[in-house]
Image (cartoon, rainbow, N blue to C red; front, top):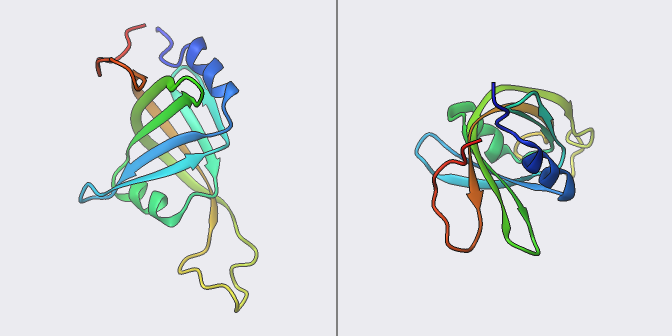
Length: 135
């Protein structure tokens, strides 16, 4: 089996402080988020553990499709990874949620979810095609 998440992708992920995460609800309304704690598991799985906003979490409950972008800010070059969330679990809840001064509609939760990467494309502001990179 050929590694989908190759060493150049892994290396880039190790150089940047955050990764962009795009989800959409059941009607297709998009939403962007930032992932800060991301690890690679095996050859095609990314594991996120972050304090994602409720919109991101609601979206992956009704629409598991996800796009993830890793890009170097100084060059604007990187990778777009397309896949599906196949596992999600809350690992902690914000301990100040129950205080009366808070106005949050739902508690902020530390959530871990796993994404099976199905395609990786070049991501750049320059001339490019959206043909998946073949390894």
